[in-house]
Amino acid sequence: MQAENDLWQANLKAVSNVLDYWQKLQKDWYKLEPIFMHSADIKANLHETAKKFEGVNDQFRTTIEEFQNCETVIDACVVDGRVNTLKEMIGLMNECKRELDAYLEEKKKKFPRF
Figure 1 (cartoon, one colour):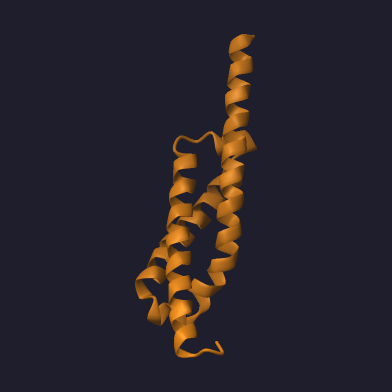
Figure 2 (cartoon, rainbow, N blue to C red):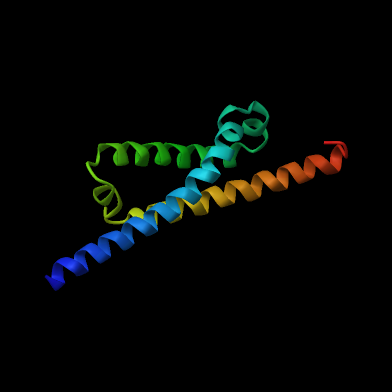
């Protein structure tokens, strides 16, 4: 009985961690996806950053498909390396955000009304 309780506790902790990271990732992805995937100006001027975001976008969509193929939320969240993958995607997304912010700040200096 104790072993079963420990397993449930570990699984629920994993679910909580994954959902926390997922929420952060999804929030940032939702804001950045239209900018990096649909803006010709950003793709032209931040080519490397846009490529980096495309990689995160592909991985994000693959993760969504993996979640959809799982029968339960626990099955989706206890996958080995899931938290690390989400952390890596968040890190890359933060890099993209910083580089975009720097680019926009540079544009503001050139065009004060921007």
